[in-house]
Figure (cartoon, rainbow, N blue to C red):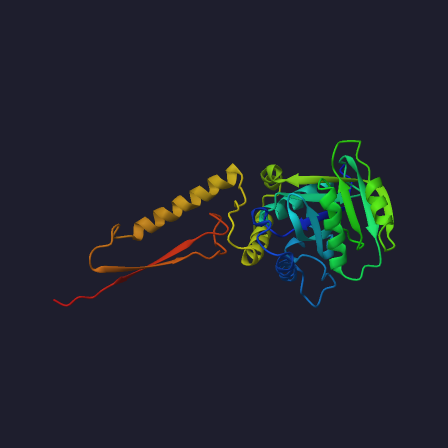
Length: 307
């Protein structure tokens, strides 16, 4: 029997191929707009910290940090959020893949008591911060000397520096010594935690396990909300299992056969006039052909001529 536990899913919003293209303040502004779009805004409910599109898939979830940040040498400084999920690890990994695919992320991190991954060292730093710039400045200073670390703001407002390296030679002693020389009091704690990364190579496999009408609708909602703000990037659509592809192909063939029966002019004769409108904006498709696509609308009219 699969045991249930609490998992923390860390979700960034800037697409992997847009890293460094915008200032952090602009990315944070877009991130906050995205979260405000996704949260449950129903005043009659008490679940205002839930993502509305997820309520059917994961009823027991909530946003525990709406607007945090992380910084690494690979992805730079970017905004993120933490979603707490109560379920099993497979469910947490599938939801991570859902957000990773919808938000075009290279990977989604999972933490919490139920994670069975490898332990790694974390340095926790806290203080009476005057503002967020003080936090980000300290993060940049430390990562400048130790670029292999991964820093983030945790759900308690503390800075967490993760050492994911397999080398046992690294020590936080030099960082602690540097902090002790600064004219500020810091709370410092070193501990071991477990976490896992769901990367792009796993998205397709995990999402096949979730394929249903609910997951398709959820994916469309997440992708549509995200692409409105972080547009202009290529990102693959959700892969469908071969069974559903076959059904989709059969429906398309049946639809084409029906159209052919009523199509008396396969090629437009001279007395028909066609108007073509093409949109290059992302759209919510009404079929499963593609989630966000360019679409073309053709209008054909009959021109009456008098002899």
